[in-house]
Image (cartoon, rainbow, N blue to C red; front, side, top):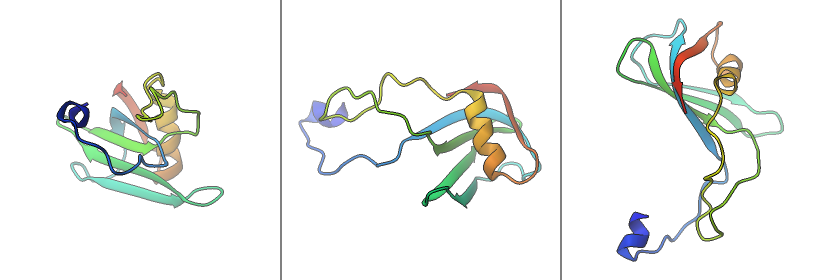
Length: 113
């Protein structure tokens, strides 16, 4: 919107991957207050990734991860922006946390995507 309003072009393309994020309270044994990144080899190649950024409040983090593969709902070929796709459900976030974070962490209350 900003580029369009200023009459600027975009000389690039979007990432081939899509990401999802959620602001959640987590119950885990990781050190509090640190940004964390977890990586693993994904089935079929590539990497499975989870990035955890601390937020104000006790045990609150913004979790960012690759979205499950689904077709995009584009606003138009020149935009390539997913707009009709719902945010992630807590179970989807928990599945990534279970897959990548050591121990038995739980993502819970306060989830918003």
